[in-house]
Length: 168
Image (tube, rainbow, N blue to C red; front, top):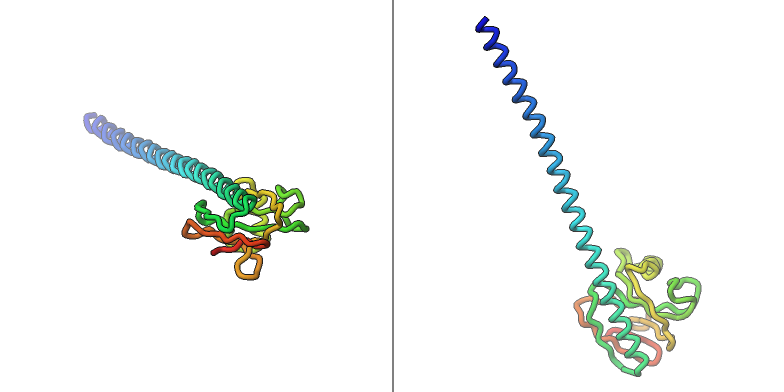
């Protein structure tokens, strides 16, 4: 009888240990999932804030450029945001929606693949681009070719001629 009691005690102990192991494993898995979700949430919050900061800097830079153009300045310095591009769109078929079918100058996040349609997509996205009307119909170019000017290693100096805006 004593052996039966002892055997029951041993079996119950083993079962309890196995039960605790499963319970602890479940807690660890839930903790890892919770920490992963928290890291994702905080990084998404950080990058959303960073993108809005870049957009505000882009708006200020483009307004500074347009003010320089309208005041007749021959040269304007642009400081921010790094990794964005200044591009001009003449009135035609493929222009950003915010241009209202008029000539405009935009500052947009530089796409991974620099094609006209990718720049158009970024300029149309309100979180990746900002456009202002180009009343003097200036063309953003490098050399004699109309091409975006990348804001790399700011500040960049832009030279404003009668018909073009180019990197100095």
